[in-house]
Image 1 (tube, rainbow, N blue to C red):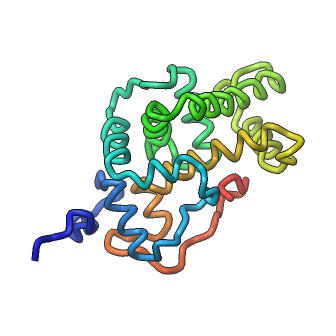
Image 2: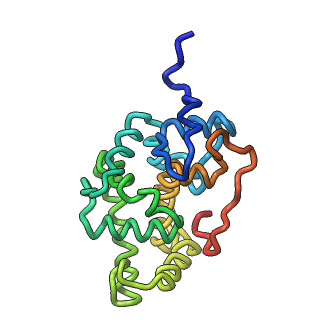
Length: 212
C-alpha cells in the first residue's frame, strides 16, 4: 500500500530528546489523531482567529518553522524592537515561548497576513509598549517582570467593551498560544511523550493565569 503523505510518520514521532526538530505539521496531525479532531489548542478558543487558518495550512506552517529556526534570525515584518517586545511579551503570557521560537514563528505568519490583520497585531503590540511607558516610564522590554505581570493582569481581567487592552491581550494571547502549543515543547506539555498523546491533557499551572 502506498503511504498517505498526510499521515504522520511513526518514526518521526518516536525521535527522542527534548528537542528533535519535530515538524509542526506532523505534531499537529498526531495531536488531532490522538485526542480527536475537535480538540482546540489551549488559549485558542476563538475559532475565527487567523492563527487557526495558518495552523491548518501545512505549507505555511512548515515554511514559517524552517525560517524561524535560523540562529541569527532577521525579522521580515516586525522591526528589531517589535520582535524583542513580542518575545518578552510571549514569554510572560506563555512561559517557554522564547525557547520555542514563538516570536520568529509569528513574525513569519504576520508577514503573509492581510494589511488589516497586520495593523491589528501591531496595534496590540504597541498598546503594551505604551502601557509600560505610561505606568513605568519605560517600554515593555525595559520594565521588570513584576511590572509586566501587573499590566497583563489588568489587561486580562478588564471589561472587553470598556477597556481596549482586553481585546489587545486576547488577540496576542491567541497568536502566542497557537504558536507555542503547535511547537514541539508545547506538544510535550500537552502530553506528547515521543510516541503518543495522552487522552487527559494537563490544565494551566501558570500562577498568573495568563494562559487561560
